[in-house]
Image (cartoon, rainbow, N blue to C red; front, top):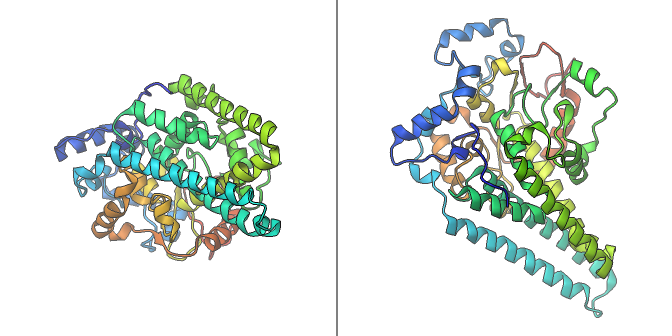
Length: 423
């Protein structure tokens, strides 16, 4: 299991400092975000600094659009923290393990049920292949996505207040999915610390035209990012000019927990060896049917949901991206959207309820709906949510992204907008 990792300044989530005093809470949060809020937002309280944007063409284009706001329009993270009772920042080990046991039980039931049907000679092969297998593949893949979300919570420290327990459970859950837990946890924390920052975010960021020409002139974007195959490529080689390989434990991004990265990667290698051994006993086709097809559904869900967290083609969903000088932790993380996944929303542990999660990743998933109601009632001007069908939205948003993701080098604030034609 990975050793205890030094906490970064990511968020109150990772520092896990929650006391009985709101004042103490806010002091601790303010310290945790000092780098992000003071360096990138030194003039936050000086409203006259809005004048600095007069020469910013990107800002001027959207200054009358209330759905697009800048770092000068948002409160401090400590002010937002005050609206939530302390109880929402405390996780329950018992409740967290209940979700783990529930998800693993459903995965086991689905596996055993499909095994029974697949090995029953009285059931027609046509029915097994074209009805039962697709149902199993989608259902099991969705449950694997749910398991991933629980491991994701471990990485944020919202599973429990015990870092060693978080890393142990997270490593186990993500190894099931062939994901190096510590490696992904660190890259994901980097994303949370730099959300919607054109210059620093980790994935799906707009690409300056000079970067495209200098660092990846021959690259092409696979349709819909290749869905599950795109996730595999992301793990192997990373995304864009700031790519991080999650199979390289010596990447600079992992230097704070090199040993944890090595252990996580070793765990995945062991899992692959077990799958290889299983293929020699039961055959590769069996391993593909029972594991890799659901894995492909899981990884496709991962690409779809993570992309839609910070992009949208809807008229009421405008999610700005900022260069580092225009960015702050609050405005960057507010550039997220709450989406409704229908019957799958609760099954996947409310991961679509995303704005509050991005502001305070330490809040456990079972409190996200409650805290989102509090946030929306207090700050209705910052609400970004959509109830549009997920797959239709993903398709239309990808098309919009592909037509506009290359931006001019002098862009300061960028918004994907289907009513705007990119130069």
